[in-house]
Image (cartoon, rainbow, N blue to C red):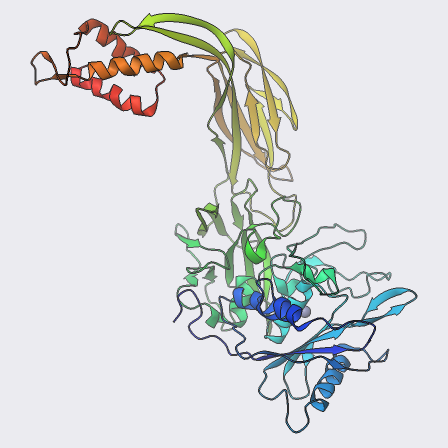
Length: 598
Ligand SMILES: [Zn+2]
């Protein structure tokens, strides 16, 4: 068993056929086809291997030689294309069946369309079943994207469409007056909703768009640039619905719905994680044998085949937690249905399943070189809250405003300079209990107040009152994340309250949080030369040790001037009170002052 991969890969021997119907187009070289369809890091077969935890390995699949075919409009539908190509392949291999033993067919038709009125018109592409029951996909080369190709091969492997947000994916004649809106193709994070991904762009109703795809590398000698487009993963939900066996070795974590007061927690990795759980399934009370009503939760950061997922909150295809359920879409037909999630770049950190009290919370996540995981909890209900998170203050020295001299216990002269500083502090907000919605633009709205005065995006100046005086603070508000940045002027030591009010889009009851902005205005520090002098002095002091309650005695080589104990005490006080900024190594030596009982 290879750790992290399926114990028992599903055998699927794919026959990749290539048929040219227009000799004006050069054959795509074998090496290009092998690279882009079979073995390359961005190839279609690699995609399906990666996105199924290695469940499909396509062992013994084959790329068959090009054949010439004649296809005459209007007889160019996907079924005619594939049966014509298969006839040509069999005619070229008399005496045996070159397709014997294959589980399915992926056909590339070159170019896959014809010139009509001076512009190229692509033919029907898609998937179906051959007369002998084997599945096939037909890909007209020129008009097809890699996304479409991966989607169609998904059908050949046994996957079906996902559902979710109302969209125009089933309106096959978008140019006519009849506008069709429906939930099929409505999952913004699933290859089996390609290439609509929930996009609603027709008619006068509300509009939104989902786009989880990305443009991959240039493909030498492939005649259509559009084949570069790739992504996203198949949702873990849809993968599990059709092939639960792809989730061996702890890939899926399953629990019943919680009861009141109960909660659970799990860490999930991304779909292409090398090991560990990638899917949480919560089973409702009384779940039927079909599994209808179960809830799937997965973590989808923008990486690997998901690198096209978005962080901008305006697109349906947000990186973050993604929630699907299993629903009945026709008698006896169950499909995975997108319900919403928690965008990583949003301010709202939980999601309540509509029509249920079930709440999924994004507790923490990481997506960088240190790791890629999300800690997810679940419970019934959620308490509405808004919490301010304060960043570390960014203190900028603006200029030297004074200096004063002093002496070390050893008698050296030191110089301490005063710097005027401005302080920039970022305040971000995290809300819970606002429900969440699958649609963009429905996060809570955020209102900031500084010293009780409302401040609004994108930036400005706000006057505050501190200790009877008025000071001006500059502020910025990020229009996307609502992050507030407050900057003080140099030389002004002050504090101001920072408050936030979160409201639901409809203006319903809100929640608030408070914090404080603090600016030191200036600080004192020794010059680098003085720090070196002080370090030398401490070195000398360190040659004394306290023996129990006895006198300070010299320790180490050389005669040492015995410093004045009162002076040492003052020096230690200053160091302890933070008035001395030293190199960390010197700081260790400073700690040894305790040996003097100081
Ligand atoms: Zn389809």
